[in-house]
Length: 613
Image (cartoon, rainbow, N blue to C red; front, side, top):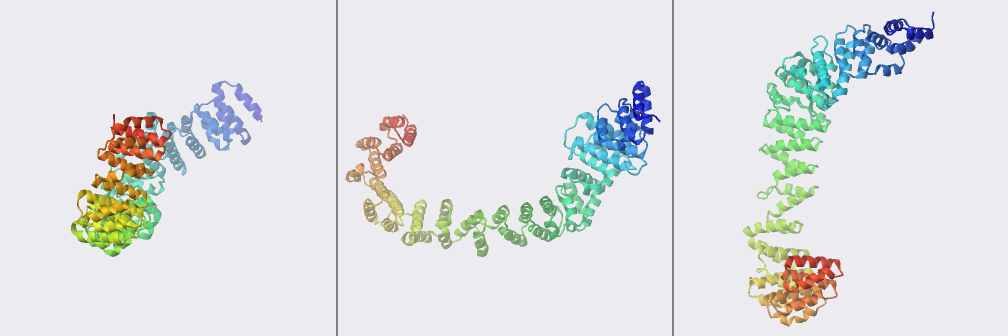
């Protein structure tokens, strides 16, 4: 018996043709300890027979032999055609699965006809692995034209095999259904092809939503509409409903919805509420869409939508509410009112939009519940609606309203309850706190009813709160300027005169502004205010002189612009801007260029731009 080293030396000395034939025969007759060394020498002659011999003993070789066979120059496709034994075929399929080359798909398709029990299943698995490697798990990966054509032809030939239609081949076809080639598209377009009747059994094995969608899309053909729809009656359990509903429900498309007309009781296809609550969020949403799509009686649909309104998914509850809003019955309205307290703000807001109507407020209990809602927007909206119901309700909530809502409701109430509204404003001025008094003065000015409230405003001007007194002085000045007050205008003048001695400078400034507007000679009596060290009081005095066209007004304004206090200079700039006094433009430019305070310079620049050249 020759040693292994002697055999190897003999093979290396042979010519290429003779060495190749001898290597293949040596591998078939080699002892277990000689296989690795002989396979290494056989790879020196990469002919199909040698590669077939190596593949036949591949399960005995070291792992690096697999890497050696992965080289592009190795003719694996030709070697696969020479394999005959079961173990050699399994080794060849494993090698093809590892290489994942589209050129090997044609030989894998032929192995689907093998007489060995497990070879067709392994070949189908290798086909699926090759398809997903090149097309991706969802079939959306780009492939060049040559690769796409080889894969398309191979999978179409595998599906055309009437004897062996394996699940892995169906899954490979489902992956390619996203972008089918010419052969597969021709097969898909045949509505009575036997493949379409066999594909339903692999639906449960699909994990990727897009691939599952492509599988279920095949079931929309005419011969399968009724069986597919009726099969929903046999579905039980959360997992099965999730597979059918999530992202690819059989009956979401128009063609699938028409299939439900052949079912006597389509509502039986729905799971019970306990099962539905355990479904994924997407499946819950599709379940609600299914309920809205099926042709059932109104009472049955409302009952199913009421169950859907209890699902955990907010989007599903929102779609259930949309279905209820399309129903005008009293039962549907009762369900909508119940959904006003939904924990999700979007759902509750949509329900409240149907229930709340400013012209016809809902019952008091529901309105009180909405005012106490945990969602701020709903609570504010309910408060606005409740405030517009009556005068009493308005004055109970008017301080909670935004200024715009308060004015809008007051204008509406003024047209129907003028006397009660004015009386309520007077009561707030006489007996309310500072916040109520300020709100009443502001609202009276916007409604144009300050003249009726002159006596109440005079009393408010004699109060202690500086903000209330200042607002009341402004309102009295408006009454005197417009001449809308009653015969008590003399008392209003006295109130303004008393306000000049108020300890708060803001009140004094407003009173000075008001008196100079109604009496042009008042500035002669109040000239000492031009030397005040409070910038607001001094600014109002200078503004009054400019408004009356006094020649010494510009001189007083320049004196204020040259004041050492920055607050006085800022107030003077404000007066010049309000009066558009061009006589001090030069002084403003000087301040804009040279003043030491940045804020003063900024305001001076803005005033120059406003006044113009």
